[in-house]
Structure formats: C-alpha cells, structure tokens
Amino acid sequence: MRTVKATTERENGGVWQRTGVKTVHWNKLSVILAMKWRTQFSKNFISMPLFSVGLTFVMTLFYGSMAKSNGKALDDSVRAMALSLGALMNTTMTGILCTGMALAEEKEKHTLRALMTSSVNGLEFFLGSTIPVAAMILAVNVLSVPAAGLRPSAAGWAMWLGLSALCAIAATVLGMIFGICCKSQVSASTMISVPILILVMIPVFGEFSGFMEKVSGFLFTGVLSEAAAALAEDTLRVDGFGIGVIGAEVLLAALVFILLYRKNGYERE
Image: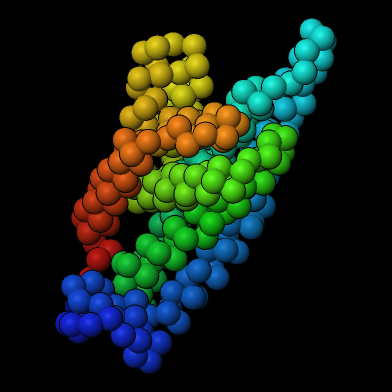
C-alpha cells in the first residue's frame, strides 16, 4: 500500500492526494459506493430505515390518540418523544446492525478478502462502507421530523442535521467494529442486539431516571435524544460537551476498527 508524499493537496488522474494519508482512487471508491448502495437498498436492510420512519409516525398517532382521549392536544414535547424513539432506532439499527451484518456477510462469503487483494486499500473500503449508511441514516432522520408533526426553524434544522450526521458516523464505525469481529450475519445480529438495546433504552429511560439521564449524556444516542427535545422546543440546547462526546466516541471507535482491521490481516503495506 502506497503512502502519499505530496506536500500539497491536488487532483492527479482522478486521485486525491494529501500529505501523510493513503491514496484514495475515486474510480475504486465509486465502485465500492455503488456496491454498498445496492446492499443498503436490498430487502434485508431497507426494512430497517422504513421501520424507523413508520415507528415515528405510529407513535405520534398513538400519543395523539391518548391526548385526545384525555381532552388534550398533542404538544411538541410528546412529539419529540416519538421523534427521539424513531431517530434512535434508525441510527442504531441502520448504522450498527446493517453495517455490521453487511461486513460480516462479506467476511462469510470471502468477498472482503477478494477486495483487499484487488488493490483496494483500507481507506477506500472504509469510506465506501460508511458513506452510504450514514447518508441513509441522515435522510431517514430528516423524514422523521415531519412524520412526528414538527416544524422546526432553519436553526433547528441545522442543529438536527449536524448532530444526526455525527451520530450516523459514530454508529456506522461502531457497526464496522462488530462486523470485523463476527464470522457470519447470524452471529453479527446476535452480538449487536445487546449494544443496540443499551444505546436505545438508556436515553429512553433517561426521561424517568436521573441516573439514566446522566449516563445518557455520555452516549451519542443520548445526545441525539436531547437534540430531538431541543428541536421540539426550537432551542439550541445541545452544547459543546455533547458534540465532544460524539467526536470522542467516533475517534475511539475508528481507532479500534483500524487495530482490528490490521490484526485480521486485511491491511496491506
């Protein structure tokens, strides 16, 4: 694997070069992206983001029915709960489960080893695997806002888009870790179910428990849940600490994945 030694950033024959990083060949990256997009829209995986949007809409109707039966109108704080649940399910199931199962499937069918021996480097594979899933998560989180009946301001949209994108990256990198550790889709789905429950249920129970609320503040899903509440209130309640939590978890997950990737012999020098 080559190391780029250029001192300035430039485009040369479809190759993006920068000092100190691996070479990214856009033609190879585009092939991986196309392959991953097809996987993302396959019947095994597309049901998960669709389920998340549907869950947000159904929970909004359910909460609205309960409020109506009590002679009250559905307020935005309850809509935020529906949005939070849908966004959490989407981010974890699509980001962690879909990514992990797809990578485990490639290991199971030996296509990952074939990619690594066809001059595709680790950075190209990593970007090609995470970008489609992160884009899908972001799109579904956007659709979940009108599904919950919320109409945020431009500033609210900017906050929601930014934090959703960061959380999507965190979830996809975490999914890559589980995928590289599992030998099959079955083992991946079994192993991933536990962290998904933890990452979803702690922010949910944070609404009722002070301890859970504190723990939730140290999880990227907890920051996303807080962002849903802030979106409903149309305030920028998420502070730098929450962004730092997501950034730290992304960096830590990326480092762990790189170590596991090299340990399993996929990185070629």
